[in-house]
Image (cartoon, rainbow, N blue to C red; front, side):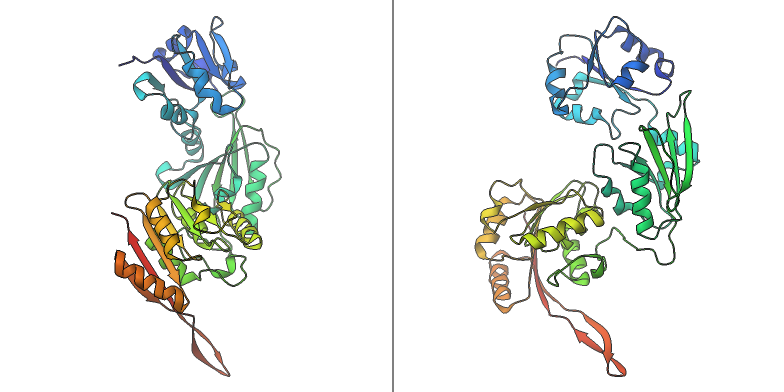
Amino acid sequence: MTPPWLHIVGIGEDGMDGLTPATRAVVEAAEVIVGGDRHHTLSANPGAERIAWPSPFDAMIDTLVALKDRRVVVLVTGDPLWFSVGARIGRAIPPQEIVYHPQLSAFQLAAARMGWSLADVETLTVHGRPVEQMIAFIQPDQKLIVLTTGAETPGQIAKFLSERGFGGSHLTVLAAMGGAREERFDGTAADWAHEVPAFNTLCIDCVAAPDAALLPRVPGLADDLFQSDGTMTKQEVRAATVAKLMPMRGALLWDIGTGCGSVAIEWMRAARYARAIGIEPRADRRAMAAENALALGAPKLELIDGTVPAALDGLEAPDAVFIGGGLSRATFEAVWAAVRPLGRVVANAVTLESEAELIALHREFGGDLVKLQTHRAEPVGRLTGWRPSMPVTQWSLIKR
C-alpha cells in the first residue's frame, strides 16, 4: 500500500498561527505547496516550490500525481472536505495516500458570529456554481449560510428574495473571518446596497411577507409558478409522479417529453444535488423549461433537442425515468435497458392509445398501474360545482 504523500491543509485568515503544531510542521517541511494566491500569502515556507491552481482546474489531478515522489501540501480554505477541493481530489487519488488537516470552516465561523446552531441551518455554496440554485432553499423562517461567488453575489440573492416576497429577510455578509481585516455588513434584502469584499460568506434569516411565494421542496408546486403552454403535468398528478420517481441525493432523472420542465424541476428541488436531463423536440418548450428552471432554483437542468428512443443513445445511465411524452414500446425497452438496478420508471398516459400501451406493458413487466383524476370546485352560474380534469393512467415499476 502506498503511504500518504499528499497533505491537504485547511488554512484560515490567521494563517500559520491558526494551525496545530503538527500541521504547521507539515507545511514548513513541504517541498511543494499548491494553492491560490491568498493561500500562498497566508503560509510560510520560503524554501518550498509554489504552484498556483492549474488552469483549467480539471488539470489539478494530473499536476498532483506528477508530484507524487515529493512532499506535497495543498492549501485550501477551512475544512478540505466541506464544499472544498479536498473531496474532488479524494475521488481521484486513493484516500490512503492523503492526509487531511481540517481547519474551522466558514460555516462554523459564520454560525458562531451569528449565534446560530449549525444543526438548524441550511449550508450552501454558490461558489463557482449558478447562484440561482439557492432559490430552492428560500423558506419562511429558514436560516441559510451561503459561500458566495464574489462581491456581487449578496446583491443577486437579495434580488431573488425580494422578488419572491422575502424582502424583509435579514442579510449579514462576513468577510475575512478570523483575521485582522474581518468585516461585517448588515441589512435587509429589500434595501441591500452594501459594497462588500469579493471573498465573503452570506448569512440569511428568511422573513416572509404575507403574500410571499411558498416554494416547498416536496413535490406539488402550484401550476401557475411555471411558464407553460397548457400541456404540463398538473400539480396533483405531478406530486404523485415525483413521489413514485423517488428523488435521492445526486440521482439522475431522464425526463422524456419534458415540456415546460415541471417534473424535472420538482425532482431536482426535492433532493440535494439531484440531476435531470430533459429530452424535448420543441424549441419553444425547451426555452420555457430553461426559464422555469432558473426561476425555481434548478439551473443545472440539462435540455436535449431530440426524439426518443434515438435521443437516449450515449446518455449517462439514469436512476429514474419519467415518460411524459413519446411513449412507445421501443422507448420503454430502451429505458428499461439503460436504467440502473433499483431504478424507477414512471409513465403517464392521457389518451386511449397510450393507455392501451401501458396496460400491455404492465401485463408483461408488472409494476403498479393506477388511474388518477382530480376535480376542482369552480363556479356553475351563481353556484359551485366540481369540474373534472382528464384522467391520467400511471404505470410505475422498479428495476430489480
